[in-house]
Length: 78
Image 1 (spheres, rainbow, N blue to C red):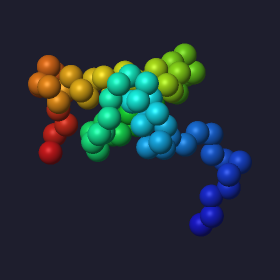
Image 2 (image 1 turned 180 degrees about the vertical axis):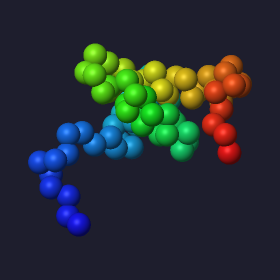
Image 3 (image 1 turned 90 degrees about the horizontal axis):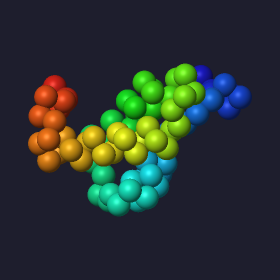
Image 4 (image 1 turned 90 degrees about the vertical axis):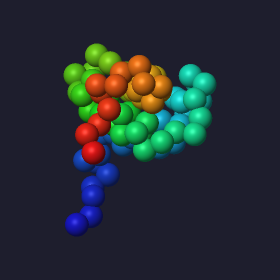
């Protein structure tokens, strides 16, 4: 089934996430970085009060803290 481009409201790409990561000094993103960015976009941007750039930035910062062990309870279940 073909996707009608008029039905697409927003597409989050890895390039979007990489661009935000660069602005906050991160590189070499993992699957977890992209997963968290998607999660933040879906949960925080639905009402329009939170920008996609802020959501991605916060997501990437949280993943960095997770990876450093600062939030051990937030690690995804395997």
